[in-house]
View (cartoon, rainbow, N blue to C red):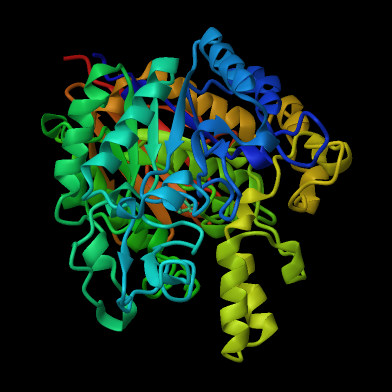
Length: 535
Ligand code: NOJ
């Protein structure tokens, strides 16, 4: 089977915030169908749909009550079938989120089959990712159950072969419908050390991340399900190193096609604690991406991303969301899309959407944010400092609805949006972006086209240039007789460099790369040179 995902650009839809067709303030499947031509125009190949399954929405669909039903707010199974056929009719593919580390506590398995989960008379000391202990007491059973995420997300026990078979059966059901693959939620958490020992300071991650049987389970899943379909997989894997990724994504191992690393996303924090943030040191980012580029070249495959529904907006994070919003959004796109791997665009990234700074905690909806707020308030931390953390790192930054136009609520809904809009929708919206000749949208369109025109981007080697430069990220991609040199200025200063060989094939400025010997990078400028040597 061909590895089509290596030639693809993937677009992530967070359905709740994408487009509302019925005025209830919540995005839905018909809303996505309305916008498929837009996605086609952008040029993407694959859509990844965050969960659309029936769910009580404790964690916006990442708590699934029924894997075989569509969430009522999003529509019906008929709507889903129509969406799938309309995606295929436009030559695109659709992958679904697969959330099988845990279910909702309202799933019938949780009610009927205790052996599908982890029940203990005595909890261990693990903390949950969303704050508080990872164990919840049930009066009915007089026991505790494990939940690495919220207490409404009990962890499935993959040691039980019946659980695994039920999951495989469900995966086959969706693949038989014709979907093209899965993005697998925290899939490296599925194998736990069965003795569930205490962890240092309540951190149990060493006992549930990349656990003892994870490779065995993934190989079984491949054998039982994946190998029988022409599908792709990407596993979300907090804590995975390049060495782990070499095992997970090496095609000879029959596990996954690619994984999402978190390493580059954790560089602007002091520790594992995401709220403990610091300014990004560009040299750290360069060296980290270099490490991943080298580690997987020829033996696995990278996924490339700056954004998703869990991360703040990259233009606010690593760019400049004020004066140089457009320039820096474009530069970040260029920096990522010329690397080896499959790029992911998260809804709104192609517009340069930014973080939000809502004043009041009541304006936020995300369970992680709300729990953190309560916890830190109880510890006596000031309201101001907590709100500042939320503005920088909160997940709702990514979840404010997509800004389609200048109409009320950015054209997202005719009702009241479930989460407030970013007030900058008058300036930043798809309508404006599509008509403006200098737009982030057009820049992304071009990036996608360039990947299709130059196989070097897919196949070439990677060399980091100017390693110690703290404001410019430059690299070379090479293959036999072709070379690309990419320069990205992560600052608002001007920098001069020796001009590399070749012609400028892409930039976010007029007159980029001009100069015989030396050229200048302007604030947040990105420029790509291409050189073909006739041998
Ligand atoms: C990772 C998902 O991306 C995130 O949104 C979710 O809260 C957790 N996994 C739990 O499913």
